[in-house]
Length: 339
Picture 1: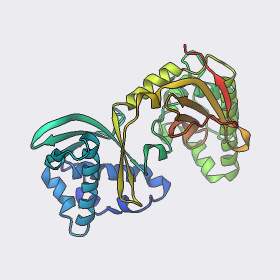
Picture 2 (picture 1 turned 120 degrees about the horizontal axis):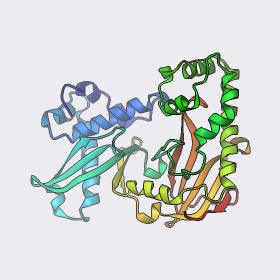
Picture 3 (picture 1 turned 45 degrees about the vertical axis):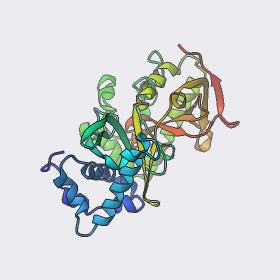
């Protein structure tokens, strides 16, 4: 973390991001990045950066409280209860969030200046628990993982089935298939006139916006119904392999209401899938979610959605953890073979 690349003085003024409820949804990404930068600063190897926060004229007491809560909860996770060595330990974090990493911080724990634990991967979320999060992973709906690579991906199904109807909402020509596929997972609307015009028209016209939502709901329902009827379409093995990457992480959950940090790890059985898969209906009785049960009695749900406006850009799965088994009576359940 270079001193010149971040305005730490500005961030140190924004302690409300840790003490109050979130702002508007559109600010989530920006606010999350600010929180993560502040945490990395509090545990920076550079004491000058730390002091911008813990010596802050107005907010120093709150920053000290936040740092103390993080330190105590993380150290208590790694050291047995009552271990006197905890008082001799310190934590250093390096900010690692980005597309090339699937975690937020790489941390080391020092005991009297000597490294005790190295390269701890930490992932930060808001809320009381990792199970409160709307998602903990979001693969593209074209990457495999959930659907076998021999099965038509949702993005291919959508283009083949709905490109003509989509074109009726804009005067701009839809890109040819190969070019469309090369751009659809890029969230920038201005990468092509078709995406930009479709987005603008949907924002200006409530009629077009409604029709795009209906098209999204219909396409996802039909696609998942087809998957439900194809016993070799769900790739349990690839999904498990991808989920195993979460096993070497420690999850940190910050509650603004309680000013408390939750520290959790997932077990092998939390992410080990049974062969029973459920298909859940959303509004209007249309399929929108695939649910997997795990050996520990928990569930993993994968909601199929569009991240950047319905039917415009970035179709993806919103993968969420649940502490209970969600395969209930209103869920359509199918037994899948492992292939």
